Each structure stands twice: as C-alpha cells, then as structure tokens.
Length: 319
Ligand SMILES: *Cc1c(COP(=O)(O)O)cnc(C)c1O
Image (cartoon, rainbow, N blue to C red; front, side):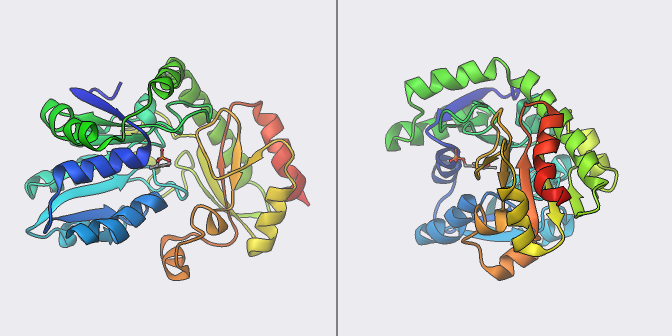
C-alpha cells in the first residue's frame, strides 16, 4: 500500500521506531528530528538512545533552514511525523528528502495520521515509512502493532535482522486483526477526512472557539502543501477554547457519546486534553514552545453520524 519494496510488521509503533534505530545507527551517530513527534519517540531519542552514544537534535517541523543547520557530519537520520499530532503541522516531505540525500542521510517518515490511503511518503522521496498499526491501520482500537516499509536491503535484511534477533515481532493474532482492518482502510480514511473537515468548519464558526487546527481550512498555514502532498486532510482536528484548562475539561466532560481517551484512529470518536494526557509529562517550557496550551482539545473524528458528533460536542461548547 505504501509502494515500498519490503515491509516488516512489529509488535507496536514504538517497536518499529526502535528497530530502525537499532538496525541503522551506531554509537557516535546523530539524528535530526522534528520537535512535533509522538511523546514516547521523544523519550526514546532523548533518554534511551544517548546511553548508547546516539544523540538527537530537535527542530521546528516546517523550518527548512533549521533542519539544514542542525545536520552534522555524523547525522544519519532525519525523522518526522506529518501531519503532526496534535497541532496538525505539515512537513514538506519532498524538500526534506532532498536535504537528507544531499547530506547522505535517510529520511524516516511516521505516516500514522494519514496512512498510505491518504499519503505515500516513499513516492515523495522518503527512505523509510513507519506506522503505529495501533491507530488507523487496525482502525477499531483492538490491537497494538506497527510496521516499517522501505527498500529491500534496509527493511528485509537490516531491520528484519534486528527484529528476528531481539524479539519485537507482531503476534500472529494481531497480524490477522490488522489485515482485516486494512480491508476497509481507504473507505475509513476518506470518511474520517470528510467528517473532520465538516467538524473543522463548524468549530471555525463557533464563538467559543479561539483557533482550529485542520489543514482543510484555508487559514491553516500549510493548507496548500497538504493539498499537494496528501489525498485527504486526515481525521484529527484540534481546537482551542477560551478559558484554559477549566473550560477545556468542562467541554470534554459534558460529552456523552464521544470516548474520553488518548487513543486515536478508531471508528469511535475520541476526545483528549493533550496538555494533561499525551503531553502530561512534557515540561511546561516545551509545551509552550510546541503550542500545547491548556485550552487545547484534540478530536480524532470517528465514523458516527457527524451531526451526532457535533451535537455531543455542543453540550459543553454552547454552554
Ligand atoms: C501511537 C503512535 C506511535 C506509537 O505507536 P504504538 O503502537 O502505541 O507503540 C508512534 N507514532 C505516532 C504518530 C503515534 O500516534
């Protein structure tokens, strides 16, 4: 589906990312990573890899100059997630692939939010794609899983070698569930995108909402890039309510149909307060830097009737 030569399934998305690092890096190597990545990936890069002599620098996802300036002689990987979570920033995959290759680095793209149904990073020049199958690939919150896709030599030999030797394989049962999920992937992703676009428009017109983050909106700074690079805008919408944490929690607690959970990629709509959950362990300084404010709410729009989703959200929002 990604258009790669080889794919290997892993026990989780984090196992996929860890296996890439173990297979392709050695002591003395360096990673340049987008700052807007999954929290646990940040922990892997900041806490665990340095113990083995591997360092990482973090840059703003859309600041091409910062990417360029952070590359060193010993840089081996550029790592990013696009769209990012929860603020749905978009990286220019083609430009960053060019930069990686000019510097003999590999570009790794975490394609979790779009899936190959909406975006194929390998076609834009990325070297490896990673997935958390825990999200949209399964699509119903049933399993934990992951995958790495890319060239035969890197994936089927080097990364597979590490997985076979160290153990983070996908269990047979979870593999079967993920394959069932893939049968409906493009149908679900198109519907998630359409529903999220509807919700983003609704929220953008709501007086209680200060800001909406979704690339379908023309106000999104990378609206054009998303249009050219993706086949749909994706199912995750974030927005800021006036009144900070207290008001954000009130909106979330007033919902009756939406699931209050940090997971995403389910057919059921999930609603999350990133500052106290997914980014709860991140320092206040970094939260401020990446724009995770106390009024921010993230919704992974599911496949329920969109009017029901809007009505459920309106209980708290309208009040
Ligand atoms: C969830 C997630 C991961 C980690 O996946 P697990 O399957 O939970 O280990 C990595 N990247 C992104 C973007 C994610 O959302």
